[in-house]
Length: 260
Image 1 (tube, rainbow, N blue to C red):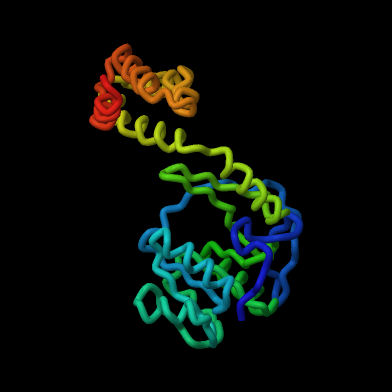
Image 2: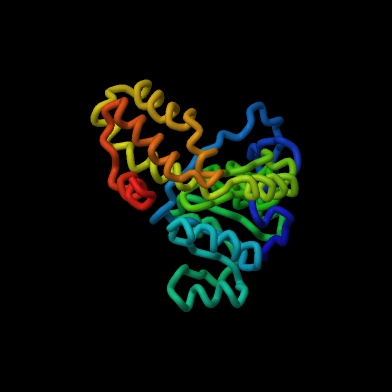
């Protein structure tokens, strides 16, 4: 029942920007007026139902488990990989064809079957229950699409072409992946370590934005790229002092490591 599609690694969905509306037993396509709204969701502990038991389903399930979701897969048959995850207790299986009762308790639904009528029924059933649904490689049936994702030590970038071109999304992912060096993760960690102390002395969002933007504007990323770590850390410490922000334990450790 699994759909083997080009968009298995992100930017799920293909075709024109149209949104389906249920009309009796058929789905009528209406031109989509606005682009998709990018959003990050906390799915830890949420129930994700995936219909379809093949390789694409396995990749979707693996991604959902990575972010902490409770995954249930519905299909008469499953890949060996999925069977193995079930034996390990990582997800649950329902060995059956889909029916609307499979949506009970679902927070998110992903359909990856190779039967158009089943995909349409899943999409309609989800809309009737107000459950967000993604039908893999069929953008007109989707209420959300899945971006290509870059993750590097706390830095996460989501890339989408709005379902128009998964191939281009993958190319963008590869290009960006090459351009993001370890300096971004290092600065991300350091600035994150200063957030609490900045909030304690800088009363408004505008004040804190000015402080953190000022650090970036001092060229600390370039200093790290050039191997001038000590200068980068000293620059951050100087900005902290100028704004009355306490130096974090992480920054103190970096300064000590590089001779201050």
